[in-house]
Image (tube, rainbow, N blue to C red; front, side, top):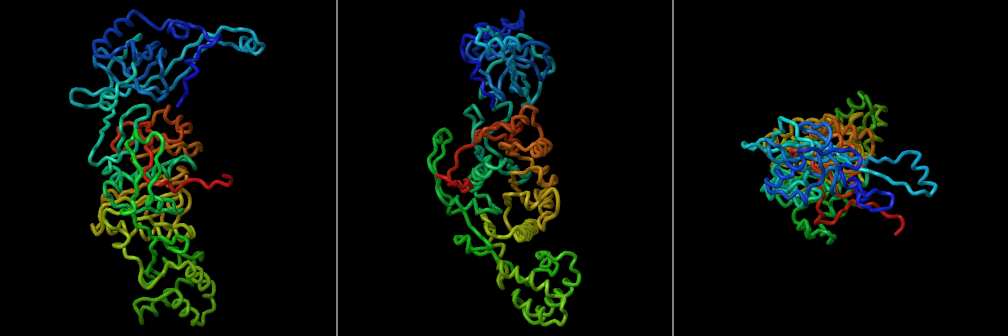
Length: 528
């Protein structure tokens, strides 16, 4: 947010006239006092909350305002309209106009006293008002020049934006920035319309996702988290008391009783249950896709022949047994295939008894799929197979409605190139909502995520992003994002997010609530 504190300073170089809207230009007219009185009749006290005066050419949805009180970019205001009553607006941009010329600046540099006259102006975008039917409308006629601009009442903000608090299906993520208004995302909307959490590295996306996950666990939502770095198992531990937590009504707690953890590598992740696949259930082509062999028609033929031979004599078999059959063939061209299978065998993701989906997905529980230590190509295969199983099982209602949370989503559904998981991620993004399978996409590189997936996320939580390509991708995928908000994305302070969708009709700046659980995504310090 823009800091307007220097406007408050009283120095020798600042004219006393800066607080007078007539210092630079005469922007008031004969309507001013009438409009102030009109505001009084509406039950508002202009003397205490008037922050500006409308001046210049005035439209029905935008106008300029001479700032006479404390006002910041993105702050909510309200303006009386002769036909519509109080109308809610928002500060889109601000500018400080001065008479300081280049020559006068040079004199100041030489130590001479220079009188500076200045005035702060703001560009206002009006959001509208609720009519007698409760519908959001904008005035049909322009506002009057000279009308007072007032700091918005919380009640008007709630009414116009349509903010619902303490809803049965609401996930409490924080407070409207600068107001004591709870912001809750509608959980049903999250499942039906998908969610994206977007931020640069260190922007707080994992922290924000932890807040969302805590709310989902409170509401007994069934969740699967694809966790490539092992960040989310920290939610089994209580967090610490942080300053300001009482404002949000948050106290530390653990969700240990709501969390299950699985991992292909239980040596690196000893607290996780083993995640295994049954080799006999895999198609030869799927197994070959796990290797670095490309266009391996000959290898595929050999693999099919060996698997068919094993299936003819036993219901389950191991990779070692498969390699033994291949080695027995007189064809010397399978040497590369055997080497690749040796690599897969060392990863140890196959077993005679694989992990069953009813073990992995339990109603009302959050399952962490901890992939820390697993090679990226194997991660993509695991995500592809599990996501495909989730989609097919939801189609026949064999598992409960649920959310799949995908951290580092650009690795599993990239905009350029194809991973094993690309196709199913696109399918879930476009069709999952029909069957009660929602998805939360988390990434630090919005431009690198498949646009077909990102554009399907109707609920967006945007934290600080600075890469121009990522900002462009975000702006093109978020509806209702004003030009001012788009510019603000690269300047959002840590702890603030732009939230759009999820039952929220307009993009909002939200102060994210503290975590209840321990945050596991902190950066490692080299020097303490």
